Amino acid sequence: MDQLISNLSVEQKFSHRVFSDRVQDLSQKQAQDLLVQMHQQMLIKDNLYRELFLSQEKDIVDSLFGSNK
Image 1 (tube, rainbow, N blue to C red):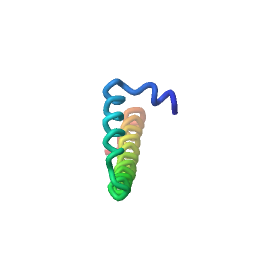
Image 2: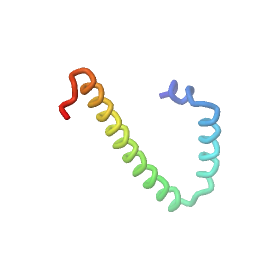
Image 3: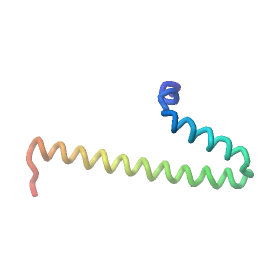
Image 4: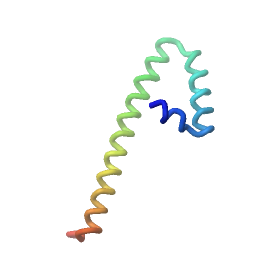
């Protein structure tokens, strides 16, 4: 995990710092709402990655073995 953090671009590090600074000013309720929204977005991102991976995998199989259209 440390290696992934150290591999962030300068822009990503700056964005993280801005986010971190802004979070410090949130109330507990605002922070909880933000966490719930972020969790939902992470789940959506996971589904998107899964769909992209499965689609790419299907494209690879079709190109190797021919498509049955």
